Image (cartoon, rainbow, N blue to C red):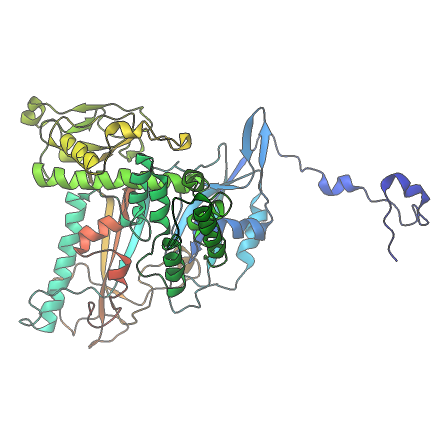
Amino acid sequence: QVRIWHKIFEKQMPNYKKFGTMDRSQNNKKVEWPKDRPNYLQFALYKENIDTTSAIKDVTRIARLGGSDRRQKGRGTFTGITYAGMKDKRGVTTQFCTVFRKTPDRLLILNQNQKNASGGGNTKGNGSSILRVGNFSYVKGELRLGMLSGNRFDIVLRNVCIEQKRDTMTKDAHNQLTIDTLRSAANAMKEVGFINFFGMQRFGKYHDTHEVGIAVLRGDYKLACDIIMRVKKGENDRYKNLREKWQNRFTDIDMNDDEAANEAEMNCAREMLKGLGRFMNCETSIVHSLSRKPRDYKKAFCTITKHMRSMFLHAYQSYLWNKAVSYRIEKGGGTEVVEGDMVFEEEEAPNGDGKSHKGKRKVIAVTQDDVETGKYKITDVVLPLLGTRVDLPTNKSGAFFEAMLEENGLTIDSFCGVQDRELALGGDYRKIICRPTDVSYEIKLYKDPLQPLIQTDLMAANGESLECVDVTTMTSFNKNNDVGDGDKNMEKFIIGIVIGFTLPSSSYATIALRELMKRPTSAEYQSELKLEGECEA
């Protein structure tokens, strides 16, 4: 038998003080933090094949860092790991992070896990993730989301080929034409830049998040929920059947009979809850709410997390902006400033991101005198992300915004009438042309379609070299050139390019690549490309 004794009865225990007493205060005693040491440890987090959120969870778990809000005089101090931006899973990424009052030895335990000692993003691996930490220093302040001026990218494009003159040129001549074309395209990106479109990822996996935003601005929450719940192209049969069942939940129901309609929706919602996938967060929130409060669509929509609800409205802002910038370039040209365009008063945007920073920056309209004197360049021109605190251009671009709103059953005042107070849209300004900085490129020949073409930090630390040849400056291609490893007659090789550039925090690398390649960047298109042989099927 095991007897449990309350502390107040401990003297009555048969073995009272027989085994001594444990000074619990010793285990929980706080380590004195040196007064002359800054409160935050900054470190570089290197990761492969894992997204930032999951990586932070793993570091916290392995290093046993914990993480909580410490409330002091109404202010919160987060003692866990913080960072300035999210990095994708599909990439080899390095970013700075901060953690409150921790020492490097607490985190270095992560590097002792040598399960994945080699890096490079090589897809021959087993798909497991790699995490490393380093570059420690103490700093006064913590990093927070949004505290970054931009992102540096080094991107590999494999098995590059061009179709021009393929049938009329020798193989060597066509290979040289491919190299020359790559060189020209990379230089054009550096000198001209690209239209600063929002990437397709802004509109969700099924490219319909902006439609939800339109419905919310109209106050039509039933339509918003219907768009989220409707059948999605490309989903598996299990989810397709569930969505079809939801769409047909009122079949043979008299909608004038509220009780019957409510019961039909409740039953359907409860059945759907059993079959929804773990990542279908919006759908789960909606049906869970409707299973208890049928046909209360506003309440159901508002149970979706604030971040996700904001995403729908931001997607519509981005949709309008993309349409407007296309119109502006078509009507006004992509190289000249026209009267009525909008520009920031200052010459350069703070942090280089081209955003208005919650109204701190003012915009002005370009006059005819400004056009004639060449005071501004096309890279200075901005267009608004519509909201309650922005102005429309005074030229045709402004009228185009109003026409698009009218087409969607909205006006500029619709942004003032958002019923969800958590989702207020102040608006912003965004430059129409983005010119990358620090552009560099290397054109490479290689044999193995999966081999690394960039030496990552981890590869450099492990002394691993690349097995490819840089032909960036080659002016006369010949198969008998020395293309590596003493192989003077390399009959089979693949051409690739490593392009590097820095973008402001609000610009998309996928859009830069689309301009470089003149090809779609959608997952549907890219998934059909081949790593060797004929690139396009």
